[in-house]
Image (cartoon, rainbow, N blue to C red; front, side, top):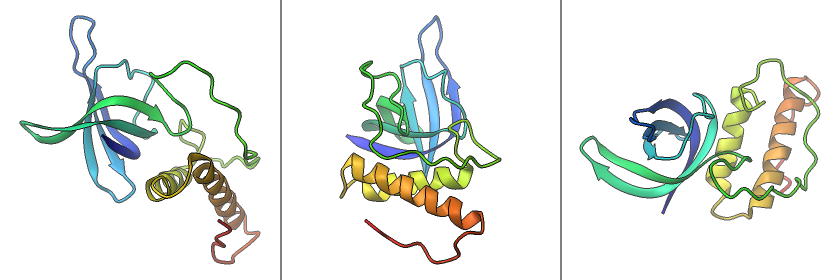
Length: 156
């Protein structure tokens, strides 16, 4: 099973006769592009969304790709289990930046999220990664408001 977290760069449906065949290109935190295909309806996703894709790696005519079994926005399960997610254990930051993506984060904040998930998911629990993401985004926002110019202080 392969898991990729990153930003959607290309998303197109090549399906016919009511069947879906979504092609996506995901750009991960290291700048590597990954191709992924899904038969699920991904019409709610857009370019620049931060997503996590799970599936089997296969080889096709154009090289390796992921045959997606799960395709979700970070922090929001899509095309999966319909049980509601438990409420977050960490309070959400109250500062809202001016320029936002469709996920409500700036592009820089989205890359913080991608980096935290990419690097932390193998050694931390989901709750620890989410808490670290909230802390990192709040620290980033505080530094950009001019309140604190100290280096990032790792509290985890």
